[in-house]
Image 1 (cartoon, rainbow, N blue to C red):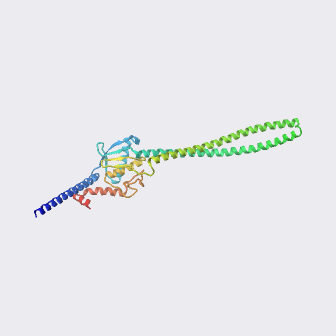
Image 2: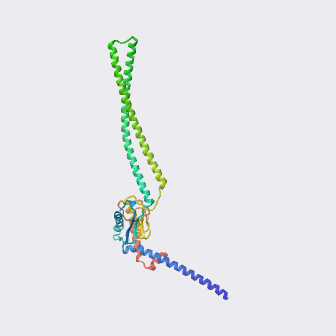
Image 3: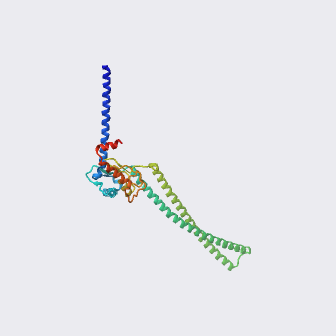
Length: 326
């Protein structure tokens, strides 16, 4: 009986210890949730303060221009919400950083490749225009050469026939002989002119071949650069342009200032506690897809998410726990 009581007491002690452990875990998670919820809803009471952190010079972006774009990203939310949500404070520990890595390096190399591609297309257009011009000139010169050659051969045959006739008769009278010598001289001049015309035609043909070779070399070089880029970075690879860490916003990649403004606005939304929404036109959609990059605006879904965050601050501690349990 005593032995049974000791074993029973031991089981109760173990059970009590487990209950205490689960209770502590529950209270800890509850407090973490409430703390996070309170933190994300502070923007409804006072603006989220931030400072400008590191701006890697390889972005080609000055700190002044970076701050200007950040302020523009702020206004996307503040204009829609009708109140101040963010505030620049150089002393704030919450920083916005521009971190240069393979993501922006890939973008820069792609831009360079696209510029080269445009240059190739421009050169191709010039080559095609010059090619068409030379082709027309070649066809005209060739036609003229063939006509002159036909006339020359006809005249040469007539000359040879007449010479043969007089030779068969034992020779031509002095006046006929003089005419034949003059014709021989004229034919020699025409032959020389035909040689020059032929050289011109061949020169134009050589220029056409060179242009064709130039175009082929341009395309080959561009294709080699494209293959090098694809072997280095792959095709259709997705990556995060920016990340909100809780203590900072890190920007890793942007195509242009509009793209950068939208990316910062998205991460600022996360700093407010807003998660992704389902509308592809929304600032807080998970992809850069159908948003107006040049004139970004918060959608009804964005504002609804913000209002939901702000509404949560009105709940009491135990209401928050009850909400979390549900």
